[in-house]
Length: 458
Image 1 (tube, rainbow, N blue to C red):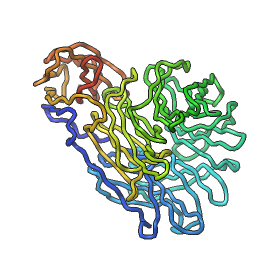
Image 2: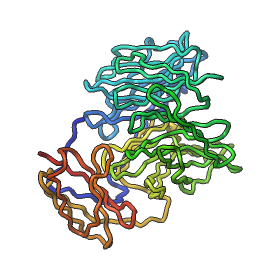
Image 3: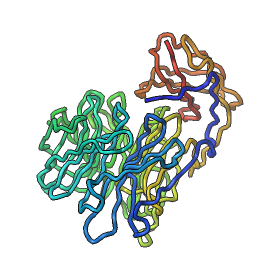
Image 4: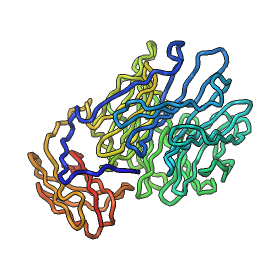
């Protein structure tokens, strides 16, 4: 990925709700006829812009439901859009579960299709979104396909579920099927991810209970776990951690409806903590997607149905520490589809979230928060010089009222490589660190109050 590096002095204004905030809506192609468009996935591209993969529904008698790509620049202005249909007007039902940028700047999209058969649907495009090839793998009548999750071996994991069967599919970058496994355990899966040691972790729900399964690389079950929290629970997203633990996001159900939840478990599936996110009052709230940010916290996004009868929809973004503390929570005024909102953290404490609005596809960037909690706001500068650095860099924190500060330095994988108590000035020795981009988080009593980025050159 091409990175625009920082200047010699890096200055970060913390929690400024006006910093790098924008939001855009993109009218669907068929809006005049009542067509609907929703964004389900978003990635940052090599040119520092963004690509959304969504779905366009044409309002006709027959099913015409297509995957659509929308490319934007770094400020969310649309550059191009492409419809992944062989012919506009085809009777078909296509779904998108994941999108990845390839080394040549093109894209690989994974999902499902129903067009004379049910199948695992893969599309490879060039950098302009024009289709290079399409492949469909027979799923033997299975309609419910979910996930398209990349592994460290550049393969992709998908799941299919029928009334009695749960299948694991693995494909390579050429769209070839490298594994098809009938799993021993049967439940409703929502997400799958590769663990640090290469195992696969699948999360979902079974009989109203949050359910997780860990398998080896061939899909053979290592263990299963059930977690009872309420009358109806599900894990809808999973985020592995570098130490072998994992986070899940989902929902629990009570008399007043569903509440968005998060939990952390160790590598054996034992609970470390679990929490309900924020103070959302709604009849239906759930986590749709999660990502780790540069400071090592987890950002989660999801949907909110505020009123069951009037179907007033919204969304949220929350930052949660790995110890389970909610740092802040932003509420969104637009509808975020319960099954498809996507979030990434391309730099610093910023997030990009994609979903759906009343106007169609929706994309928002925010490097600050409008919090629903009573957190204080801190305005001070963090300076890093020299940056880029070779042997050392000096970190200076100006106009800061805190006396007890803690610094954590993360590499690009999210691994902590430094963890020290600091004052208002600190000399960071980096002669023993490999060249690369590193992220730093500044904490006060375990609460993140700011972060930055430094490039180490050799």
